[in-house]
Image (cartoon, rainbow, N blue to C red):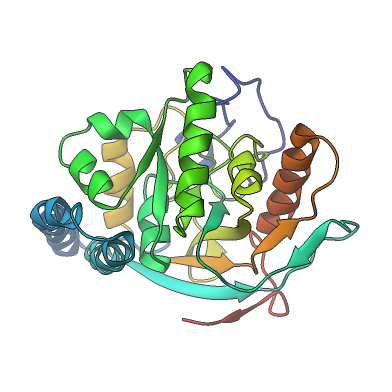
Length: 299
């Protein structure tokens, strides 16, 4: 299903996607058995609770070491949930954009991706060591807040625009320190068959820090077919989304990483970040419907 209509945003940082579980989520191609569902649920809870003391200890470690620990833990949790992780490398191609230049893979990168599920930060953490930019509510959830802080999460109040400059400055500071920060610039989740526009605010952090931006596409699928089973959209519940995930037998998430890019400084700041957001968004969209010549397997 391809969604084209975009309803108006509640605020610039709280847009609404047109996706709803009733219209976007199809039955699993192959359902997991009851025994497998129970095993996955027990395994996921065990990994979550086991990660709490690790996260508490990690807060006293260096960011590179915390990133490696979080990466291993995230991969273990994905495995417990029954989700296979694949990683591919996409080729840089955005037509008609002379401001783009490929740069080497380096630390201090703003990693930006489309947003489908509550699982996306977990998927990106399993893909490479990174610090998530999360909504402030996550910092209030029991257990999850400990895990997020252990991973070095940065928080943003999406309903308080006056705090936005402070959040952008925090991301820029992390980038200057050489960290990789992952953000989801759509500002809301979509079902995965389509995506919304990238909002430019967070790209100012990359411009301020002189850091590269690395686009990435997250695609959940059952076999070759795109799947919305893990999506967390509209009036969906977290419990319902998790139940669909562990109830699907063969789920794979493919992360397509595109080469890091920088924008040649030109024009006013708001024009530069808007252009950078547009370039990143266009690149991410190419990964939603991949063809063999668009990417190659790297992990």
